[in-house]
Amino acid sequence: MRTLLLSSIIVAFSLNTFAQSKTLKYNLKKGQAFDILLLRLKPNTKEKIQKYFKTYFPIAKKYGYHSLKGFPVKESPMQGNYQPQSMIFGYWDSLDQREKFLEYIDENKPEFHQDRRDIWTRFDVTYYEMQQDVSFEVNKEKYNVVTAYWQKKKAGFKQFKKNWQEKVRQAGGTVVVTLTNGASPFGYYYNPDYLCITEWESKAAFEKFYQKNLQMDHSAVQQVNQFKIF
Image (cartoon, rainbow, N blue to C red; front, side, top):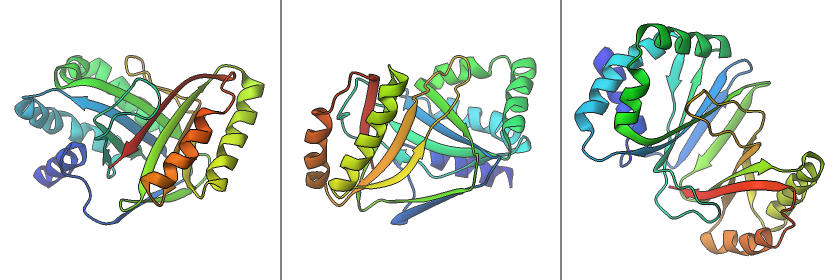
């Protein structure tokens, strides 16, 4: 059983082996803590990563962690200066269990964070405590884009988000999921004020929206990251 769990998480974090089904379905329950990891793997780390998962994944499972299917990021970003190699999803049964896992790790496995630094050049974490049940699907055959915004002016940013979502709809895109009010652990900070996955029929369809997006008033926006998944 332990070997199967180890194998499954290695597959989930792999840069080349992601879910084979056309549509990935995610069902999150109120009270769960939803993790998003943005990773960039160092070369020649196969043995280190196997040891990492063998050591730490059983502990995470004990504290209520569940791995979910993730996505490769193969193309240069459309906006911003940040390109992860993969985007990984997971969840914890509760935020309390997630926090207790970190407490246990810090007290009993002080080498944990250095092990991560030895394997990944980037390991950015954002997590969201679910305030209600949330379900969404990502269709691999569509053109899927992740957009993250950081606010500069609170009032103006609220209107910017509203205008941005309306432009997505007008251009024929679909808002798959939006996430706000996230948190990041110390040492892994990546916490946009607004993160969204949008779905488009094609690259051309997205690019029509993209040109309008670039022309928007960004005075209330501090920073943006935008990249295609799959």
